[in-house]
Image (cartoon, rainbow, N blue to C red):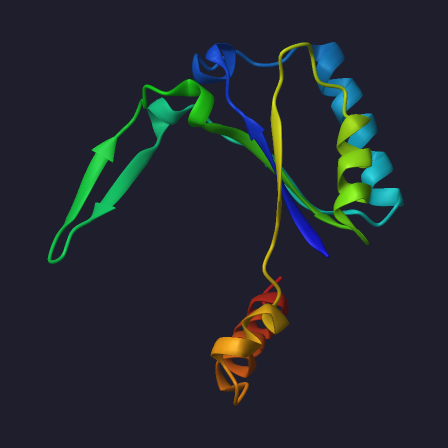
Length: 140
Protein backbone atom coordinates (compact mmCIF):
# COMPACT_ATOMS: atom_id res chain seq x y z
CA UNK A 1 0.00 0.00 0.00
CA UNK A 2 1.20 3.46 -0.83
CA UNK A 3 0.33 6.50 1.22
CA UNK A 4 0.94 10.15 0.52
CA UNK A 5 1.85 12.04 3.64
CA UNK A 6 0.88 15.68 3.20
CA UNK A 7 2.65 18.19 5.41
CA UNK A 8 0.41 21.20 5.98
CA UNK A 9 1.76 24.71 5.53
CA UNK A 10 1.95 27.27 8.32
CA UNK A 11 2.68 30.99 8.48
CA UNK A 12 6.45 30.36 8.57
CA UNK A 13 6.52 27.99 5.59
CA UNK A 14 4.32 30.40 3.63
CA UNK A 15 6.68 33.27 4.51
CA UNK A 16 9.61 31.26 3.12
CA UNK A 17 11.20 30.80 6.55
CA UNK A 18 13.59 27.87 6.38
CA UNK A 19 13.66 25.29 9.18
CA UNK A 20 16.46 25.44 11.73
CA UNK A 21 19.66 23.47 11.15
CA UNK A 22 18.66 21.24 14.08
CA UNK A 23 15.28 20.43 12.57
CA UNK A 24 16.84 19.77 9.15
CA UNK A 25 19.35 17.39 10.75
CA UNK A 26 16.61 15.58 12.68
CA UNK A 27 14.49 15.32 9.53
CA UNK A 28 17.50 13.97 7.59
CA UNK A 29 18.02 11.28 10.23
CA UNK A 30 14.32 10.41 10.11
CA UNK A 31 14.43 10.16 6.30
CA UNK A 32 17.45 7.83 6.59
CA UNK A 33 15.39 5.56 8.85
CA UNK A 34 12.57 5.55 6.30
CA UNK A 35 14.99 4.65 3.50
CA UNK A 36 16.67 1.87 5.51
CA UNK A 37 13.25 0.39 6.32
CA UNK A 38 12.25 0.48 2.64
CA UNK A 39 9.33 2.80 3.39
CA UNK A 40 10.32 6.03 1.60
CA UNK A 41 9.55 6.22 -2.11
CA UNK A 42 9.79 10.00 -2.40
CA UNK A 43 9.64 13.15 -0.33
CA UNK A 44 10.15 16.85 -0.84
CA UNK A 45 9.47 20.23 0.68
CA UNK A 46 7.62 22.81 -1.40
CA UNK A 47 8.29 26.48 -1.97
CA UNK A 48 5.67 28.88 -0.55
CA UNK A 49 2.45 29.42 -2.47
CA UNK A 50 3.64 32.93 -3.41
CA UNK A 51 5.83 31.18 -5.99
CA UNK A 52 2.99 28.99 -7.24
CA UNK A 53 -0.12 29.21 -9.34
CA UNK A 54 -3.52 27.57 -9.56
CA UNK A 55 -5.28 26.78 -12.79
CA UNK A 56 -9.08 26.87 -12.71
CA UNK A 57 -10.82 24.87 -15.44
CA UNK A 58 -13.96 26.27 -17.02
CA UNK A 59 -16.08 24.70 -19.75
CA UNK A 60 -14.00 26.31 -22.50
CA UNK A 61 -11.22 28.22 -20.79
CA UNK A 62 -8.44 27.96 -18.23
CA UNK A 63 -7.79 30.70 -15.70
CA UNK A 64 -4.39 31.07 -14.04
CA UNK A 65 -4.40 32.44 -10.50
CA UNK A 66 -1.01 33.45 -9.15
CA UNK A 67 -0.12 32.85 -5.50
CA UNK A 68 0.08 33.56 -2.69
CA UNK A 69 -3.08 31.83 -1.55
CA UNK A 70 -4.91 33.02 1.54
CA UNK A 71 -5.97 29.88 3.42
CA UNK A 72 -2.65 28.74 4.89
CA UNK A 73 -4.21 25.81 6.76
CA UNK A 74 -5.37 24.38 3.42
CA UNK A 75 -1.95 24.59 1.74
CA UNK A 76 0.73 21.93 1.40
CA UNK A 77 4.31 22.61 2.51
CA UNK A 78 5.77 19.22 1.61
CA UNK A 79 5.10 15.54 1.16
CA UNK A 80 6.38 12.00 1.49
CA UNK A 81 5.30 8.95 -0.46
CA UNK A 82 5.45 5.81 1.70
CA UNK A 83 5.24 2.13 0.77
CA UNK A 84 3.89 0.28 3.81
CA UNK A 85 1.70 -2.71 4.66
CA UNK A 86 -1.15 -0.75 6.26
CA UNK A 87 -2.58 2.63 7.19
CA UNK A 88 -1.60 1.89 10.77
CA UNK A 89 2.04 1.40 9.76
CA UNK A 90 2.02 4.74 7.93
CA UNK A 91 0.60 6.40 11.04
CA UNK A 92 3.25 4.83 13.26
CA UNK A 93 6.02 6.12 10.98
CA UNK A 94 4.59 9.63 10.98
CA UNK A 95 4.21 9.68 14.75
CA UNK A 96 8.03 9.34 14.88
CA UNK A 97 8.63 12.37 12.62
CA UNK A 98 10.51 15.22 14.30
CA UNK A 99 7.92 17.94 13.80
CA UNK A 100 7.62 20.92 16.08
CA UNK A 101 4.50 21.60 18.14
CA UNK A 102 1.51 22.66 16.05
CA UNK A 103 2.56 20.85 12.85
CA UNK A 104 -0.20 19.00 11.03
CA UNK A 105 0.17 16.07 8.65
CA UNK A 106 -2.48 14.32 6.56
CA UNK A 107 -2.17 10.71 5.37
CA UNK A 108 -4.00 9.59 2.22
CA UNK A 109 -3.86 6.19 0.54
CA UNK A 110 -2.83 6.25 -3.11
CA UNK A 111 -5.07 4.46 -5.59
CA UNK A 112 -3.52 1.34 -7.09
CA UNK A 113 -4.33 0.07 -10.58
CA UNK A 114 -6.46 -2.80 -9.25
CA UNK A 115 -8.72 -0.30 -7.46
CA UNK A 116 -10.05 0.69 -10.89
CA UNK A 117 -11.08 -2.84 -11.95
CA UNK A 118 -14.82 -2.12 -11.52
CA UNK A 119 -14.71 0.68 -14.12
CA UNK A 120 -12.15 -1.05 -16.38
CA UNK A 121 -13.42 -4.65 -16.74
CA UNK A 122 -11.20 -5.43 -19.77
CA UNK A 123 -8.05 -4.15 -18.05
CA UNK A 124 -7.13 -2.06 -21.10
CA UNK A 125 -6.89 1.23 -19.20
CA UNK A 126 -4.82 -0.36 -16.43
CA UNK A 127 -2.49 -1.96 -19.00
CA UNK A 128 -1.97 1.42 -20.66
CA UNK A 129 -1.22 2.99 -17.28
CA UNK A 130 1.30 0.23 -16.51
CA UNK A 131 3.08 0.94 -19.82
CA UNK A 132 3.29 4.64 -18.99
CA UNK A 133 4.72 3.90 -15.54
CA UNK A 134 7.32 1.60 -17.11
CA UNK A 135 8.34 4.38 -19.51
CA UNK A 136 8.73 6.81 -16.63
CA UNK A 137 10.85 4.33 -14.69
CA UNK A 138 13.05 3.67 -17.73
CA UNK A 139 13.89 7.39 -17.95
CA UNK A 140 15.24 7.51 -14.37
